[in-house]
Length: 195
Image: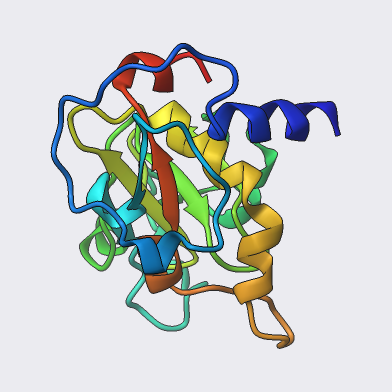
């Protein structure tokens, strides 16, 4: 509860001295932010898609547990449970893709912020290694003047809100559009680093 309260105060601008923004982004409209909390006058709201590259993991081959994918495995394959279990960096995994597995997937670089969108919604961790992951995980790579740690904390603070977007099915999930359109309070890079 305390951690959530501190994060809420941080994202509403109460924990830092405010600095003028020196970047121009496509800021969210007044209509999009009408129901959101007030933030300092120097800050702006912006959608996550304007702060970095977002992309779903890939696992095109079916069935997903086909032994051919994992023959002579040497490329770590991260799943939603691995993201959830990681403290901060993902370095442990139970499966590795071989060459065939890699061909139908994508190798994401170390440092990518992983965000789960199925089963465990809005769990986050950074890749501590280069790795592949399925489409139940989204990778985020920040643009200049965006601190990926700030984005990680904001997404974690919005778990309940993101859960509300998930339809009531056997396995809860959200889509990439939900994350791309997530409105985030944007402040100076120096302030982002203090969260």
